[in-house]
Amino acid sequence: MLALTNSPLLIAKSYEEIKIKSTRSIFLVCAAAKGPRPRYPRVWKTNKKIGTISKAAKLVQSIKELSNVKEEVYGALDTYVAWELEFPLITVKKVLKTLEYEKEWKRIIQVTKWMLSKGQGKTMGSYFTLLNALAEDDRLDEAEELWTKLLMQYTASLPRRFFDKMISIYRKRSMHDKMFEVFADMEELTVKPSISVVSMVGDVFKELGMMDKYERLHKKYPPPRWEYRYIKGKRVKIKAQVQSNDVDKYIRKNDNFEPNSGLREDDSSEETSELTDDEQFEQDADVTRTEPEQIFDESSESTEPSLDV
Image 1 (cartoon, rainbow, N blue to C red):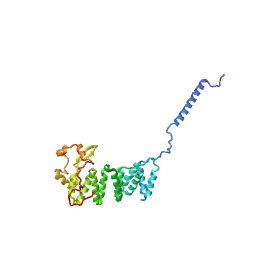
Image 2: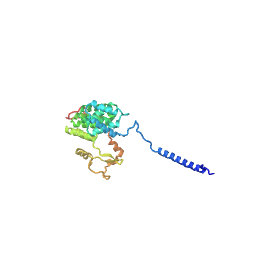
Image 3: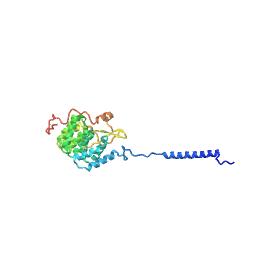
Image 4: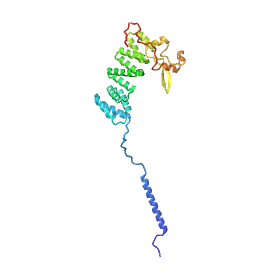
């Protein structure tokens, strides 16, 4: 009789087909599970990354919209810093640079004093920015108070640009006596004055008719013949450009030196050829030991007004 049941071969074949189908379905499921996981925003991170430049611009815009009331500006700055883990010193420095570029002197004074009250940014750069802003805002009393405090605290370690700034402030306001006092402090602290300071003091001597002190000043602080500049990372010694005709006459009278002549190898003098680069660099340093003789001495017998320095 014919059996209606399936043969073992058909059973094995159907089993293999079913097994293959099941493995394919599993493979498809696994393939569907692969791929990048969905990312959810963290609570402690923000989607927008804001740098110090954009933060500084936003803070400048918010400060400029306020009035000149001290409490209102300080309150806005305290609100800005409240959510910061550390004091945003870099952002505040960029704010000061932006305000200085826009000549917002009142805002610079407010922000700098607020920063110093927090015990942050007590650097020479911050003090110089505050001194410059006070002078530009015609608050000379506060500028002199800050200058006296810095001079008494740092004395010999005070940078030369503070002396230059105070002399220029007094020169613009024709306060000659105080300008002479600052210049005398520079000589006492053995701080070599810059070319601009020597020029300003010399001009005042000429205006007051003190020609002997004018000559002594330029004799003690002659203009530099050489200056160093960095070209492509290398230090190069070039001739300094002489700025005034009086200095030209002084140089030609004493050293027979042509200030406007080009730098040539054949025309180099014996004196400059004997000096090495290191010796010349030491002579052109900002702070050097000056001679004990000072421009403002009490022993000089002259009919000019005496300066109590």
